[in-house]
Amino acid sequence: MKNYILQNENAIYYECGFSCDNVIFISLDQDRYFITDGRYELDAKEKCKTCEIIITRDLVKIARNIIKKSKIKKIYFDPNDFSYETYTLLSKNLHITFSPKPNFSKQKRIIKEARELELIQKAMELGRGGFKKFQDYLLSDGIFKSEQYLAFKARTFLSDNGKFDLSFEPIIAINGNSAKPHATPTDKIYNLYDLLLFDGGIKYERYCSDRTVTFGDDFSSLDEFQRGQIFKNKERQKVYDIVLKAQQTAISKAKIGMRASELDKVGRDIIDEAGYGKYFVHSTGHGVGLDIHEYPNISSKSDVVLEENMVFTIEPGIYLPNDFGVRIEDTIVLKNDGAVIL
Image (cartoon, rainbow, N blue to C red; front, side):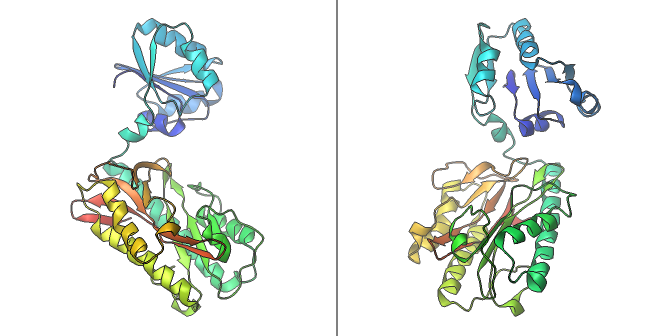
């Protein structure tokens, strides 16, 4: 695909090593254009080594001029990138076909290069450090704090006091709130023997990490939120053990050449057979990279064939409404001998 136009920050960063919140990127055969405004001139000229940098107050006008002068007949764009207004202004009366190709940048990024794997690995290591600090705080001072305050502390620990950006707002959910896969923190107070779900990640040089633990209530058993948590409540223990079996089995069965839907089925079948199938309400996983949600999608609807150096999460869950939820998540890279937890 020679001729395309981008506006998504991460897609543009992947192309040229820099991006910002006001840019249009155009690739035409061997010519590449980074169009932005004066606020980003110095950074763009320093970091974009493979593009012509154009500084303007009217990005759309310059983009139209470049496309028109090129005399191309078709240019690809991701319809998720552009607002309707921007698309209309770009394409009006140009007599060039703007061909929609959804998520084509994510498709280009589906197999990670060695340098990308290093950055994701580093993000995961740093993120795990944040998890450990949060665990230590939870054990020493977390009792009687609200979800909202614990979420604030989680952000602080994950970001290393602001040193790193977060992959997403961390999820801290206690008891009934943990039955919501993407719960928002409330003023609910964390008490001894409560179940707590913690989902978080950071960015390292723009690459994301992602991990989820569900925290048991036997404080003596803790070791960096290790798998195999212990609960005094028998139903919580049963559900946790089912989810852990589903997650660990899916990790062990992940192989190059299988379809994403096949991998989704591995863990889902375990949860189905245990009688909790209707409470597993999301896909088994998603790709991780510059975006926190990339390709491949590990879902029942995905026919993507898994290949070496694809990076994705494995995160089955069971969510019992108004009672509790359990999710266990690791980010893995697929290698010739199977999945490697990052």
